[in-house]
Image (tube, rainbow, N blue to C red; front, side, top):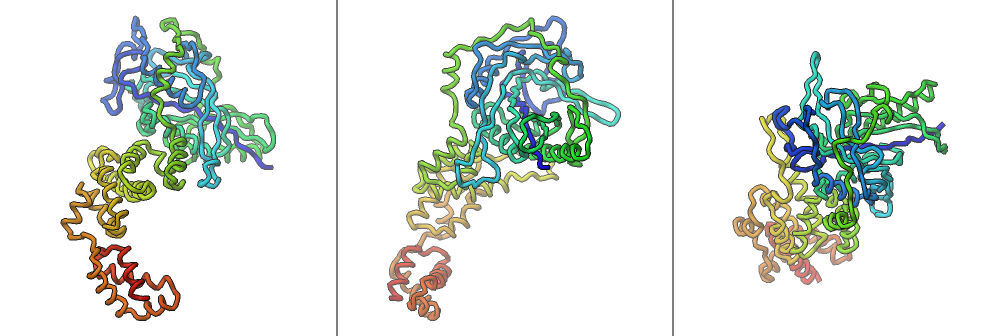
Length: 492
């Protein structure tokens, strides 16, 4: 029997606000444990919460970005549970009146022809609600330590419908969602820093049926690839259990990324287990159309919309736009360079091939280094958009060969020198003097009479051997167009 997986995701995104959700104490990562706290975070008697307006505006922005219905009124609820990560024994969240409802995330369908932008679909969302984050527990052999630095930080929970059916769709969904949120300035979405966390709800059913199977939730998924691997394992486990006649129980399981399997964590709680009730210390939030309109004006272009625009307006290939549009900083660099360069296509190729290669090499983590350096971005790298545009224009004008440019680019990246500086230093000004080039072409024909005769006999490709000899003799400095014209004239 064939089975179908049904998958829904709960994605938690830490908003990049300066202060926490209900207090003015600052947010941050990497600070000494338990230093970003105050009486509100610690739940001390008499401490009262005050809402963070910036967090609410960022939540509205996410809702508009993902096509949600923004609530006219949303309210705050207490989610009650007893656990060390929340010292006041309840979390302020939203239950029956969330800030956003509905919405969708566009994904690229796995397995489809990537050159077809039509091979996309929308994954439906259920809701998005705003809440406060909890502390972080670190478990040791005999002890567990708790750090409340992230407790109280604004946390947006994006809940999808059970609308995905494969690990690859899950990967595409998370990648697309992350790209959109980073581009909009909502969050850095760094999973290693806990800024984006994901729980996956998975069930399986016989293919062709509509009833949902028993749902199992997986936690401890701390990379996008880890989410895909955990979902893939859990699908196999559930299918195997069904075929062996073992009952699947509704539970929460922990993913082990080293051993690549899930283990039982606890039986799954239901909503009534949390005894939700309205928070008596916080008033509901009213969101009018004027507020929504003001936030809507700040929305950036969506990554897939940008990709379609690049293809339609600049005639860029899908492969190049796919590499560009996943990184909003790379897009900004490309747009600045292409505004000055004569060829958008060549600019895109240099950015996604040569620039990305050098950035990747420069940002490789040295496992023996005492501390890691801050990552080099397209904006902070030694090759400015203006410098790249100059290099491309020299190639387009026939003043620099592509091969020489490829040799110079790594040095431009390493030193910050412009292509003009390096050309002068190395004496690489392109030779376009007809008389000088004609003599070198004549020598190439005399030294390779076999290639010359083949060309005269109708073999067009034979001229490439002669071109290669001329370029070698001029150390790549001869103007390729002049070389081609001169060889053809001499051979005729």
